Figure: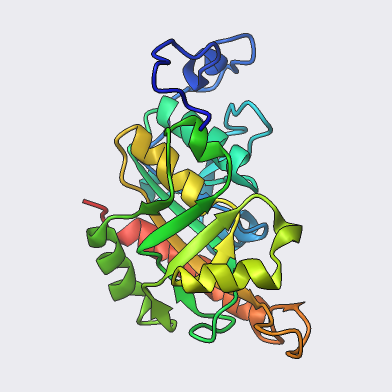
Length: 261
């Protein structure tokens, strides 16, 4: 337990204070109400290649790093950023977006599959995400699974089922990418999880802390061996690059045309 029940004191550093500090740029410090947060390295370039985009902020004023912020010119009510990797980075992104007046957040990311229920190229819209990251414990005294809205799950399933094998299954978020042991993944399977990422539970928990119901949509990028005798771990498959681009483009369409209300 890292968030103490008796602690009602203010944070020394907040995203708003950071934005208003000497780090503040001359840009308009306000974003559209909807934000898509990519945790896929090629996503922003894919967006710029396939859409007529405009830079509305050269660098979002995160505490750690910060990507440019783009809109599709014909749809300026939705902005797109790269959220970074890992739970501290994604919490920084969420805090910053909320401080810049964002009210609706969608995470588009990837996960490793460790269940026979999924394969590379499948899309998972998790009903709930097991938190095995430390960031969320600074916002909640105790946290195990973080759930996302059934309404958003239903909308995501309705859209992505047109283009991918799409499942409503549980996932897990970890801080320790090199400690995904056979024992640990069996433990996760016994908790009905099928995939692992590094950001989803933190994005859900931090967003909910501020009263925002976010959406998490994950593409299975690689398949882990179930047993030691199985084929060794490797990234994706021969078609994965085109699958990933298709997923990114459809995620952009989903964000633009589907209202999260």
